[in-house]
Amino acid sequence: MKKTDSTSDSRRALLKGGGLALAGAGLYGVAPFMGPWKHNRAWAQSAQKKPLVIGLTMDASGMYAASGGEERLGAMMAIKEFNDKGGVLGRRIEAIHIDTETTPATGSRVAERMITRNEASFLIGAVHSGVSNAISQVAQKYGTVFLNTNSSSPTEAGKDCHRTKFVWDGNGTNFSNAIVKNAIATSGRNWVLLTNDYVWGHNTAKSTRAIVEANGGKIVDELLVPQNTRDFSAYLLKLQQLKPNVVATAVGGDDIKALRQQVVQLKLNESMAWINNQQDWPDVYGLGPEAIFGVFGTTWYYRLDLPGVKEFVAAYQKQYPGMAIRVPGNVYHNTYMATRELLRCCEEAGTVQNIAVIKKLEGRKMTALDRLQHYDAWMDADTHQCQQTIYMARYNDKPAEKDDIFKILTQANPKDVVDKDAAAACKLESYDATPSYDV
Image (tube, rainbow, N blue to C red):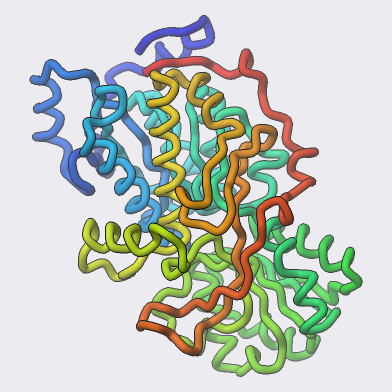
């Protein structure tokens, strides 16, 4: 490790004995999910440059395990593409994955271990916003660049922002800005919020409430749902009593799967309008058409009629044949695009030195064509959130093929749905206050 200033001393002291093989962890190099032993020995005998280590901080268990799996696939596809061309700056890329278990405490321990024992230059991945916040605090302590690929609490690029953290998903405010006004006009003014009881749910609901009230609507009640809820009968009974025009949910992962099925059983999808702030592809894939009710947001869809989309889908299917999720969704897309952009920034900077890479990422402009979306995107230099196209969708009752379960209704220009409150709340650390390193 090359020391670049005095703030690197503590990191240098901790980065000892950083073997790439971890008990209970996956090490990926030439191909996804390759075991570590033979590959490591090959590097020990090689005169080539030291591999570039990336830590994949992704759930393999807990309520976001399905999305965590798609995140890993997206990151590994981008890594493979660079490795097939010789890596980055002449260095092969190796990725370590440890299950973050959809638990903030585990996320913190995993981040600490990857940075101090494995000399990870970068950390990639997160769905649960509490886990992302925990990882980002550790990353900032060491100056490690962290890509929050799929957690979307407005606080992630607001009050919990960090100089080293970059948020690649749309946030709850972006989606509410895209949908609430029209939903009030078409479905009614009386709303109930159904909210996962953790940071993403709370802050997404807070944003939705503000936008509803600003547009003449009324929040009749808010029902807080503990994480890992499987029986929603009490909440659905309450909804039957309240009879709102609209139910706005900020519920995700395995919880939203269970909720959707139980709503259909009671036919509540027929008596009130349902809005899910954001609907991740792994959360509904395979549920069946009757459970994909309401209107919901997403950042990408595999059948967008745009150049390059078909080729992107074909590459996924070629690389990962026989997957339960046969086509890529928004979670995969977010992680692939984030990982690819990070590695491009390293090449452009001519170094993996963290401050140089951070400066390449800040304010970065990305074309719609390159990102397979309708509008150009950019990495906000003040909040470190990727501002991108936001899509509204519903179930597609005229699918072109079995997996064609979304019908895209609208696409919002990112300029029209920016979270203005995040910029006011975000206070990025200075470059001088951020430890500098070159692993």
